[in-house]
Image 1 (cartoon, rainbow, N blue to C red):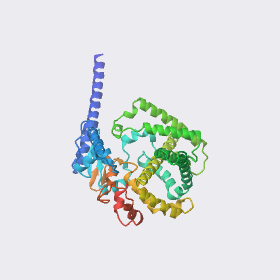
Image 2: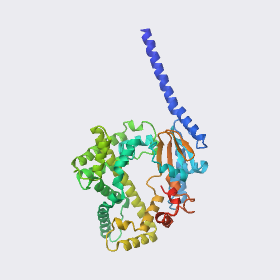
Image 3: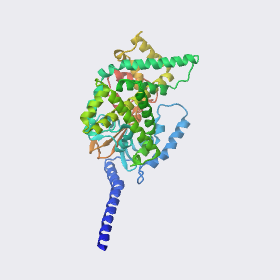
Image 4: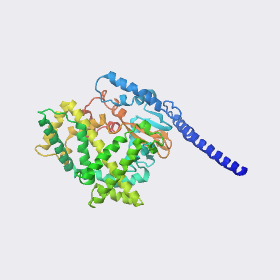
Length: 451
């Protein structure tokens, strides 16, 4: 009996020791080793705290950003300085590339335009999506094209990307025109009802507009009970998923059955069933949904996996298209409203190109002023503040060797507001600055500046 007890004690002690060593390596040795490899290349950065990394620094700097915005008083398009004051402070202190930590996760922050271009254009399968962001967005996006890596991602991209080529998109212009006409008519009716002045929630209406267009494009129709239920639940799930990025890096947070997580899991199941209901009723005509179905059948080995991949990619296409389209349209209209001289120029160009006709795909290519306005809106208000990647193997960009498992954040906003790439006042709305880039291609600055 004593021998059995001693054996059990030894096994338990061995297990406990191994577990402690694993934790020590995971939370101390490995982060220090990665930081050391980066420091030997001259990559400096703020000193992290144990376990939390630089998260306390983010919390400390945030009130300063809010205070600076309040004291500044004037409206500004350089919102990143106030939203992410820690990055602005560290860039001034450490330069265009430095290292910081989210918990024990090491990140290289990049504002160097040449490195940013090389990283953002890299097609290497060694460069993937950050693991903690994949886990945090798994309920919303699953393992679709926006979150997958490696060969699995490459196959999905090869299957889905052709649906967004110019010749395919041209065939969808009539869907956009029909929906846009209905939206404008709704606004005009509302204004007439209120004697020429009306309070219109433009951002909400544009989200509804984008939702209809994407549903028509993806599912072939937008006006059915199932589609309406799907749109409602996707909106609720997206709202529920808005976890602060600093919190999303906490390991295992997504597995805890909190009230919020239970709501997310329920919505995920309901969305799954409604997408599959649409797929099962869908005829096998050649369209985007059928492309997703065919691609899933070639990528997944089991029926359940095929079904899940169909659902995931439908969510990926729908949500990515919804946010980028609606937000870009909203910011563009806001900028035109606050710069009536550009609104007049854009209107005059549309009238000249279209005459009495509705615009078509060929006409859109002739609208240089409008294109410049939209590109300038994207420069000032890009869809994402960072391009986040993670090295799946050791990689080299320029003279920088980045070890496996390190995050790379390309900072979009500082690049879009860099006075060396633009003019001395890059925070101003000025579509003229983009004219030579968009149409003559006479300089390389554009390829380094806009992401």
